[in-house]
Amino acid sequence: MTAMMAMTIILSSLFTTMGDKAEAAYYHTKAISVAKANLGVPYQWGGLTPRGFDCSGLVKYSFGKAGKVLPRTAAEMFYNKGYRVNSLRTGDLMFFAQNKASRPSHVAIYIGGGKMIQSSSSKGVSIASTSNSYWKPRFIGAKRF
Image 1 (cartoon, rainbow, N blue to C red):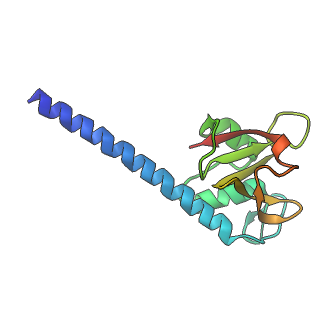
Image 2: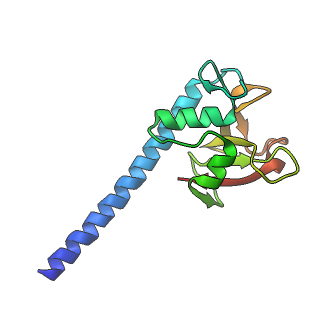
């Protein structure tokens, strides 16, 4: 009887873990789809809607449409959500510091293939290379949740 119970617990935890990974893959994919559907939307400081987005507004909006609630600012996302990762996976959040301080002031979603989707003040919602000469030296870390 105990062996059967142990097997049930093991299988249950295995399927729960697989379900969590499938759910994470779904909301990352959905968030990226939402962000891509907004390509070309102009940058608007404080913007949270398809009329205009700032960087964290785009990330918050896209993940919100996928069912994940995120804080409002890049710094709040960086300090209060997820866990730090050293190698990027699709759907991870990338953080950048645009001044000499290491405090995050920009966030983008990694979409794979060395690309990220963001809302930048110069291009609005757009796709950029992670090795872009402006962004690469300002990268301070990535988070996954």
